[in-house]
Length: 325
Image (tube, rainbow, N blue to C red):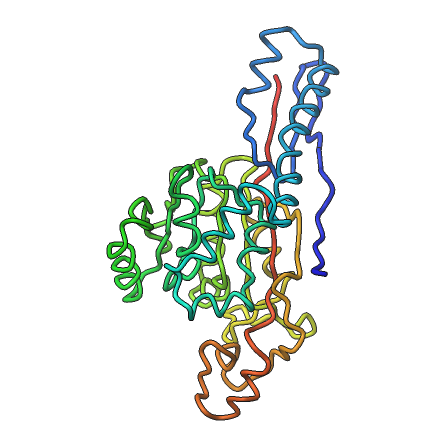
């Protein structure tokens, strides 16, 4: 059984000045249903007392939070409409067999279900590489949702764009944006995304020296209550973190600090993508392992037996801030 941990729902009263009738609340629970009205204006309209306002804020936030917990559990069980739709995409004949073969390492159904992905969401995929996850996200979201693909600079981007152009049935609605700090940071319209996802990229941003810029861009794109899902090669907690992540491995505490500096709150961590066989001490870093196998035939069977890297899987939320004056 895969282990998941989630933080309890958090409701923080940031400030309270009864004399001035000023209150500020931060909700740090993951939310999938946006609060459709501004509680500040609602309170003014019906002249709620300060106590009643805080009670209302708590009630609305609870109603907003509950759908995520329920839907994520149902999808993970595979018996919801969303879960069935995701499984259909994963089993589709349009996915190359070589990509399906990597499901045993990447666990896309379990990972996306745990993040709380729903087919009507607006999602941003950061630096999609060759499009392994895009092959899943694009057809899943094309009917009722929206997918932004924030591509990296470099020659791989041209191949990715061609991939999308060659299959308009699955990829015709994908909106491609550029993420190339510090000049290009708008990955989607501000506050528009329900979810931002990135897979094995934090080490790349560290290597280029702009990880903080990327986390701020992701925070900016998400709506309040939106989810940031991160997966990356998990570093050894006993080894000091190389700020350039030249081995490809990143310590969990380092990723958490990057996210928190941008304003995110950690609400869950999962062992879905753990690999206890990964010792994290190889001649060419994480690229020694499959699928890269940088050493080619040197100890190939040994590294194939280990499999792909041990990976952290984190769920962060952009807090909802509710203020009343």
